[in-house]
Length: 254
Image 1 (cartoon, rainbow, N blue to C red):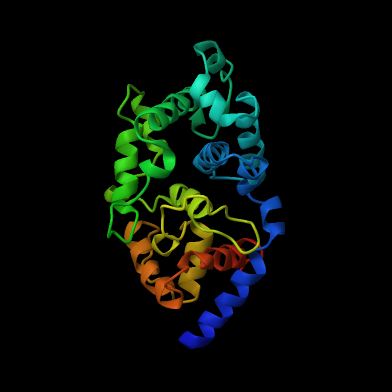
Image 2 (image 1 turned 135 degrees about the horizontal axis):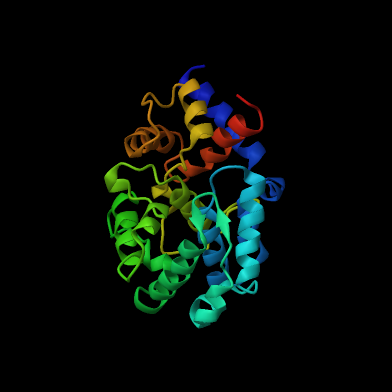
């Protein structure tokens, strides 16, 4: 395929997979249980945080997280007691355990009390067209209070080379409005043109097969390389192609 044919192919696949049925098989279904902005973004952030491994298990454990917060994420974050957090004992998703979960609640409370919430804490500075430094700064905010060193691994830092797949996925959910209601688009102070593809084994492999990506590692340099191509295809909404790359990899075994 030439470049024009490739773009048309990806446009077609993005259109195919960005539909309400996508929600039913994806962790994005967790924040879709809520209607208030803060509930949506906290549910989304926590679901995205544990979004690695088997998708069925991700959804099951993210649902359990919501249950442990009384299915009222924002109220729980802002008003929880120490005994409420003790109810988390026994929770685990792969390497994310109850102690990590407890800290995330306390850190989120700090973000809302002292950094004007998640939307503001993750916003790039004016005239910056990417999220590398914004995510780095967010991690500093997140861990500015006392924490176990082990918990830091659950928030990626692109300035150290990470592709930050889960945070980029969370950002897509929050920033990008969706014609079919998949993504939320509730962070109006952000620009969807600056979003990055949540690069994982599926999207990375498909991107390489389609010659969109040459770099072998799924790291921030690969993100930057893919950014150039996808932004050339659609400068206003480059991240729509995440649906195409992910759908081709997961559903079509491309």
